[in-house]
Amino acid sequence: MTRRACILGEPTGWHARRLANLLAHRGFEPAIVTWRSLMAEVTSTGERFGPPEFATAEVVAVRGMPGTSPPESRLEEVIFRMDVLGRLVASGTPVVNPPKALEVAIDKYLSLTLLAAEGLSVPRTMVVQDVAEAVRAWEMFGGDCVAKPLFGSRGRGIMRCTTAASAAAAIPSGGGVAYLQEFLPHDGWDVRVLVVGERVFSMRRDAAPGEWITNLACGGTASPVDLSPEQE
Image (tube, rainbow, N blue to C red; front, side):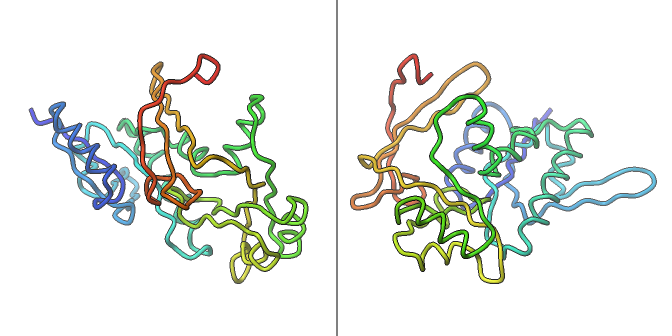
């Protein structure tokens, strides 16, 4: 019997294609579907989810959450998508990672608070909804900080604020949330660690020449790295 898996992500993304190749190597027939294709039908006799690939998938693997919509639409999209994944789990379809874990990972403020609560060192951060407060946070950070989308990935939308005007611009036009962090100088690289079950995987990410953002999607490069016992 054909074993089918569904990858929820961007079909043109290298990470989704790599996942598809690995699943195929393990005997699955993988399908990559977009976030835009998610739909749900509710009747008095039950629920149906789309895209159609969900109906035959043994597992749904999630990779990334696009943040391309205007801010006024993004929250509804994120909530609906998490709701659909939650209902999929309730119907018996495994989702990796689970919706609750995805909610924490997608929301930078929530994930940061949980890390800090566990005693890990985190950058000093201000989350504000007012232009004046954004400028005040920038001043508090010594006139140099980093603005990030609250929902986002792959380094998209990140900017370094070195002027009051750039800090003010962190508040979206028409209002919104600004997530501002102190800028921590570094040597052009960082380490990303992933925990899969009981196994720990790590890589060093080097920024492109002249850049400070290390994300691979922004031109960075990756190489294996061994963690110290403390890091692991």
